[in-house]
Length: 101
Image (cartoon, rainbow, N blue to C red; front, side, top):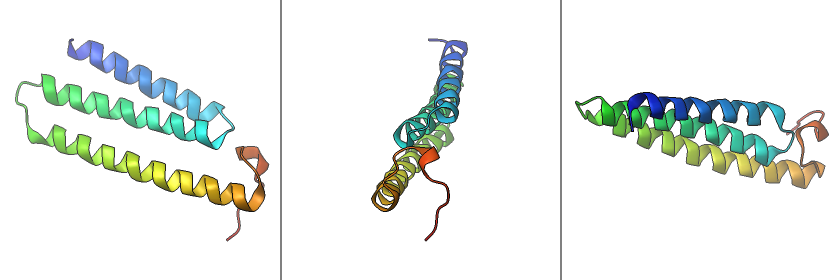
């Protein structure tokens, strides 16, 4: 695959992720959109790293950092979803009018 093909695929993932994150009302679907955005960023970073010719380790490091951020984001997000559902019995974003501690 060429760099242009991989970057187009990454842009498609980012675009689908933005659409999914902005158009959905469910917390889980919102988080899936954010996950697609991060996957697109990670694919672009890996494509630049692999096809740049130099093979510098910065691309691998950036990919590992993005994967760690994705794991932390999903864990914190699902913990927030469970906490909101337990307190407000709301599973969509419009069911919550205000968040209190």
